[in-house]
Image 1 (tube, one colour):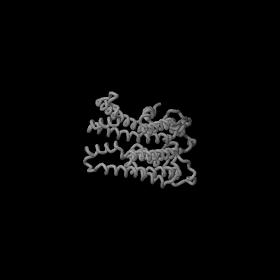
Image 2 (tube, rainbow, N blue to C red):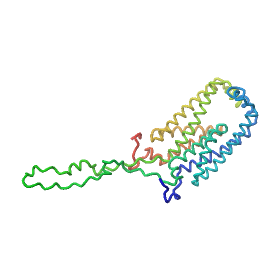
Image 3 (cartoon, rainbow, N blue to C red):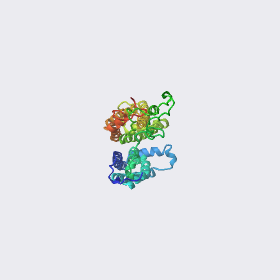
Image 4 (cartoon, rainbow, N blue to C red):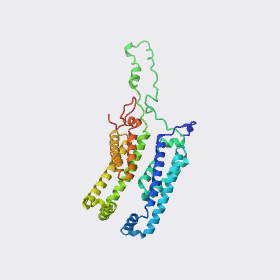
Length: 363
């Protein structure tokens, strides 16, 4: 659709505001985490962890020594910090409807995500998911200076009453002199009336558009579930390949476990339970987001409950591990987005006069 004359006056969609805020916030936190990692890069704990990695498969197959790995981590961390800084700046210009900034963010998202696997994969995933939101409607139409095509109020068909106007009924012709009146053909108006719908039946209402809040909540859920599933699979792989090394690392990180009476068997069982529960939860939440995106009311309710539980656990756990505050805030944002009035109306939580329900909505 060509740009409209008033394209400069189009209001900025909330989807663009949310995506730009997530890009700037996650990029800023990624820069902070990178410099925090660089401060501990050459510590004794980091050196021991790297030496343990390069002395065992698959790290021993890389042919790298300790200094080489430290140099690689330093370079990758600096690249990630530079990319995150550029992403934060471009995210600010996206709010000004700069199409070049949106394109630049799309280009930076891929290397930033790859570098984030070393420095901060969760925050890099949030940036990538937010950039993807800028290419969805209505953000796409706002950047192009166009308006979405209007949905027709009723389906049109060649033979339907909305496109074909039946001729008005006419009086039957006068009979010729001679034949009796009982042999006249019946008038045409009853057949015409039988083909027309009753005048009191309203035209079907057009299906409402998917709110930006629902799309944003689903995008956040998919990004978080993808990262959680990846971390769970990595934990399962470590438990299957080298459980003793993992238990030794846990004791090194928290030497008081022995004094607290926590045995190696308990740690191994707890690790397996954590990995399996997180993996199943991530897959289930992702499927709920898919169904909620398709306007399934029960799935949206389940997604709200799931996000609320995850947010509560993460925010409480952030008292012991501060990085958990990030997924806790994202889970809280998901709940807030799905509880907005526009999302509730679209999902059928509120009855609106003339609103059409989807095929999967509960009556």
